[in-house]
Amino acid sequence: MSTLRLAFYGDDFTGSTDALEQLEQHGLRTMLFLEPPTPAQLKRFPRLQAVGVAGLTRSMAPAAMARELRPAFKKLKALGAPHVHYKICSTFDSSPAIGNLGCVLDVGTAVFRAPLVPLLVAAPALGRHCVFGTLFARFGIGSAGAIHRLDRHPAISRHPVTPMQEADLRLHLAQQTTRNIELFDILKLALPLPAARAALAELVAGKSTVVLFDALYEEQMGRLGALLDGYASAQRPLFSMGSSGIEMALGAHWNQRRRVPRSARPVSQILVGSGSCSPVTEKQMAWGLKHGMAEVALDAARLASGKRAPAELQRATAAAVEFLRAGRSVLVHTTRSGSDRRLAVALKQQTAPLLGTALGVVLRGALAQVPVPRLCIAGGDTSSFAARAMGLKALALIAPLTPGAPLCRAFAPGSPADGLEVVFKGGQVGAEHYFDMVKHGSI
Image (cartoon, rainbow, N blue to C red; front, top):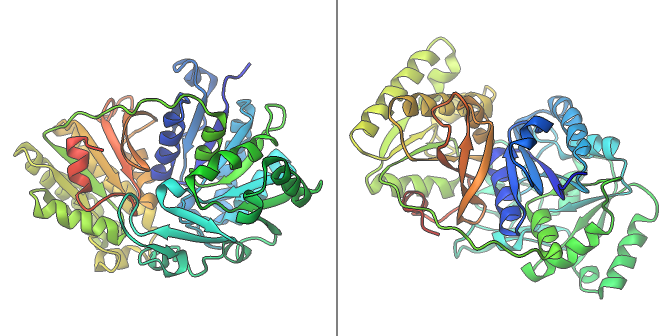
């Protein structure tokens, strides 16, 4: 009999480590894999209560997404967990052409055949709030930044691939699916639990229904978890879509003893790879370079040209190795900002595979020559490809660093990254001195 309570598929690597962190902090022993785990793999990690898969679908076109997700969902369903979650970014990164969430709903509904597909994007602990179906986000997780409607957010509204132009999630999603999206709004959530359950049952009313759930305060997450858990069983797993708010809600409802946060040791040197276009990451890179980090800038035009790519990768690897041998922390990046001309050239290609894979090749090559105790990869779209290029197979949580980006242990047999401490950071995550926090292990 399966001991798993939840399985999830993350649409990118940084978001997947966010879900891993939430589950661990709510007391559930969790492992994150790069492919749906086999029974043999699960035997290596006994007594798991949750598993995740760090996927690539956030940067895929709908046809490729369907080919990837159909077998993945079937394998996750076969694990016997009552809940199977498709984990998306809490800023709802998606469009009809890239990361299409309507495609996810079509595949998930066909595989799981559930009467209810919950859609929970709010994650108040991360500065993500959904009120009357409209999503708001803080500018910089963990910072004192202001809350913005997503279509007016300084970063998300200007994302180079999936800019958010409509904060009402039902209207945004209507561009990707013809399915009707019901709303369980903030007023229904405030009802006594029996009345809230009755209101949800009325919305579902025996038909296959996608329900978007509001949430404003962290204290409301346990109520949401109770509502969702009532529709889940091992015999008929509940398929849900949303941010790590799903893990927060179920974890709060299950009320397991939270684990005491572990601390991370300081290290003398870190290696950072960034494919992020976020202004948050841009400021973090500027801070790091001002405070002694060495810079290795990848030339996206050379990478995109094909013939010049091998020489560019070799040049960047050699430069990183030279700085590391001198004892410096190193920042390898594909762009300092979304308007960088190198990125503009690469955008004519498949940006995430091209730049993410290049980052991974350079980082792996540098680690093979100079062992570094801790690695950080920034950028949601590119991180999944960088991880695969480095040979990562699985991750286990070591300690939290900043909400949504924990410190993990890498399992990468045959790769210099095996056993390495690694952090995957989304573009909007962290304070300005974030890379200094990664180096010193401070929360």
